[in-house]
Length: 310
Image (tube, rainbow, N blue to C red; front, side):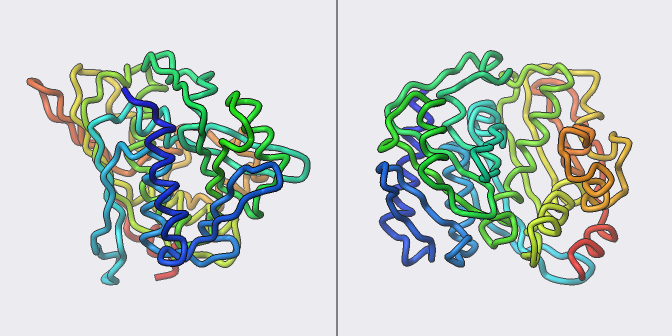
């Protein structure tokens, strides 16, 4: 497989070249790292959010929107498809890099993780990237500075001039859109945690509603996670059968039925204290190639309507 970071840089170049059209900002730090602002000081939009999700999946996923309905109200949904789910979703899109640099806190996703490659999925997928440029999407409430770029450069073993940071708050259009694109990634990660080999997943398709943009980060984090756990739908085609496919949906978790903002509040917003099983899509269909078809879970329109303020 070609370098995930090389493919992601092509999407970043598109954001930089058409920054005005996407209503995003791009600027260079003093240490020559590049920051692309997808919603902190620029508004962005649906197209910016889709491009951000393409960056996060290293260009290995097809993304688009479709109009759905929630409690009789039209709501856009993000749809994602990939024929490279292990690489696109686990080795790139997964938000697996916790950044804490001075007063800066952020959650990193994207192919920069594949240059570090310390997480379990890289061993399972037998993939480690090698490239002199790198892209990390950072979910944060302030723009990253030089110290953040230097931390990424150090961990990824590239020069700071080769670092691209795509920054966005959860409470933004791009944030709502890019999180809605994570339904399939959650299903794949949950299956991996249950012991299923992600290399046996052939294709993945996911859909989730775009949460209304909240006025603060905590409300936004609650809404966007509700969108996945109570509205996310996933279809997988896999090579091997498994006796725990039913545990890949959110309803298999003990916290099911509670809004995420309430779950986070109970954990004092310490995500290490939140049960990992809550991070799963509402519905998963698994098509075992040449074998059975499984359908598990259900959406919860009432809870979503309450969360979204419909």
